[in-house]
Image (cartoon, rainbow, N blue to C red; front, side, top):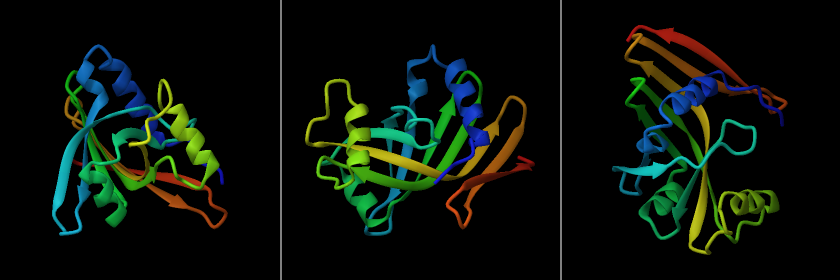
Length: 165
């Protein structure tokens, strides 16, 4: 299954680079829905992209409430605001939960690679596979939305639209 480079990813990489001197630029908010239908939001740390893809990695403790919420509903949204460049990314998609007992050996390898000294059993790798992005630049007053589609052959493609803020 191939993918086309996501057009929004370069905007995000540029924002990360421009704000790299700010320690908090690697933090974003992750929103999930609980089994009671209520939203839940917390701050998490960006752990990079999975290989050369547009999938966003997050490490977490397996005992946290977000794991149960994601098992109940795997769809989530992150909101990432960069204070120096005044850019906001809202990234919506499905999260894959990878723990040490995952039957997929490739996913286990990905989990191993996401840790310095190898993961502790209680820690999980969360992988957000984006399908909708809302980008807002408050300095230039530019707003773009990006939506992904999968072709019959499994090829992921992106469309973008300029929105008036």
